[in-house]
Structure formats: C-alpha cells, structure tokens
Length: 423
Image (cartoon, rainbow, N blue to C red; front, top):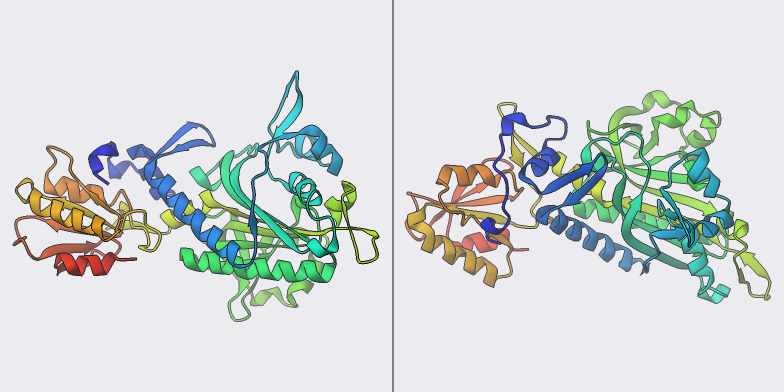
C-alpha cells in the first residue's frame, strides 16, 4: 500500500490518552471515527485487522464442524415474545434498541438465540440431524449506558455468535467442551493469554457459563485465578447468594489460593439447556418419533474487544512517553513499512515491488515533502512490526531494518528481508 492513499493526519503524541493510547492514536490519525458516544466508523487498518481476526475465528470454528450462517439484525418483536425475553430486554434491563412503524415493532439484534432456534428447528427435524453448530459474524447493538474504552464497550460492535443443538445433556456438554478448546486455539493464534473463568449467566439463562478473560490493567473485570490448576472465577460471583455453586464447579474450597487480576472479557460461552426450545415450542423427533426439546449452547467472541486488546497490549513507550504501537507479525495487516530519502526512491520502490511479488503486504511512504525522520516517526502509529530505512547509509545492497516493538536494528539484503517477514 502507498501511504499517500491512506491520508493519515499528523498528530501530537504528547496529547494521547494514556489509558487507551493505541486506540486514541487511531482516532487522531483518522483510522477510527466517533460519530457519537459508543458509535464508531473504522478505517483501512482497523478493517484489515478485523478481517484477519475474523478469518482466524472462521478457520478454527470450521475445524470443529461449525456451519457459518447469517441471522437478521432487524428482528421482529414476535420472535422475542415467543421466548419471553422481549420485556426483559426492552423494559426490565433495557438493553435492546427498538423501532416501531406501520410494519410493526422490531428490535436491533443484541444477540440471536431466538432467531437461531427458529432457524435450526426448520432444518434439524430429527435426531439424525444432530448435533449441529451454527455461527455468524455480524454487527450487534446494545444500549450501553456507560460506554468506555473506545471499542472495549461501544453501543454497536462486531461479534461472532454461535449456537449449538444437541439431543441430550450429555451431548450438549461434549459440544460445550469442543467449543471451549476451539476458543483456546483461537486466542493462542491471536497471541492473547486467556484465563477461562466461571461466570454469571446473566440474561442468557442456563446453568453453566464461562468467560474468556484477557489480563490487562485496562479491563473492568476482576478475576481470581489459580495459576497452578489453571482455574479462575469472575470476582463478581462472590457476591451472589449461590456463590458456593460456582465455587463447587471449580472444586475450590479456599479462595485465598487465588490471585487477583484486572481483565477484559473477550468471549463468553453458555450451556442453555432446553430453555429456548421449550419456551418457543420448537422440538426434534427422537428415535421413537416422540418430540423432544433441543439442548442448546451459545458462544460469543467480540472482535472489536479482541482488536482493542491486541493494540493496547502492544503500545510502545519510550521514557514513559507513548511512541506508538507494534502489532504481532502474524496478524499485522502490513508486515513492514519502507521509508527513504528522496534520492533513494528508486531502491525503495524496488524493495516494495519485490515484497509484493512474494505476496508480502508492505507500506511504502511515498508522501511528498516528508523528511526521513518524519517518515520514521509515523511508522509507529500504524502498527507495522518492521521498518526498512533507506537513508544515507544505504549502499544499494544492505538495508537498515528496525523491529518496532524492541527498537532493535540490523542490516539485511532484500532477500533476507523477504525471508524475515514472510508468512
């Protein structure tokens, strides 16, 4: 990509939000735009990164036999009334955005259990069709009263939500564990350290749920975690009357052995049981031809939160001042950024063309009237893992390369750079 086409704004890094520096950088250069509190538009870099994260999720879910589908974002009131959740979401908890016109009353999807159950019941008529897991990646809408942290808690966001259908509780548990391990693989590929924790079921219902928490001091959750046993619990559970039930799930008798961490929830899985199939009157036929309720699970991952966490966890500081951020190379939309002095332009363009020929995504800073120093400085606000610097020291063979995360510098030929940043 030629940087001139991105039209990034010049920014003052001394005026950056210290708590959410990475996202604030993207806001200030114009790659994120806030229309109002909790409602954002995303530019090229964020959108490219979102596609990369999305593809990793799709690949891992496809490996365990999940089927990608798409449910409506505009959902009729009657669908939610069928499950008994319309008043819960529009009055009691006031989570759902609604609209009412001459066609009827509708809600903008905060989740999709109702639509998923109806969709599945139309296809999964017999025990022979089970198990099945359907998932989508789409925009969701929630009336967050207190938005925070840019894409950590907005009012519209992209989420992967999956719904499983089994014929009995035992099979539901197997599917739940299957998705648990799929989630761990997803977060491992994304380079995010995850603590699976027992959590509250909230408005989803069911008896068992778990959160996938990422340790970060920017998180609004607090988890209690046993490093040796790899078990954790959301601290909010300790305030519940039935706290002992949650602790029993983990086999925890003494919470003093648990260490406290600040974290952010990136995913949440629920065992729903037969709540939705029973309340909505949607069943399959078993081996004897008798109608039975589906045993369901639901599974969610927030793509915006994942990207925000990755960016904020990779902010670069120099002498306590924010310098930029550096994305992990396996998920960075662009692996290397080429900067040059004007008299070295021809050599810089050769490097850029050679990288493109090898299928390596790169940025070349082709902006007019920018000094080499200004071009280097701007590399850190775009998250590229490496910089190729072609200045006075360049002899037409060796190129100075900097690893943006560490500041480490070394000299490489074009062939060596291609090997360094190849997928």
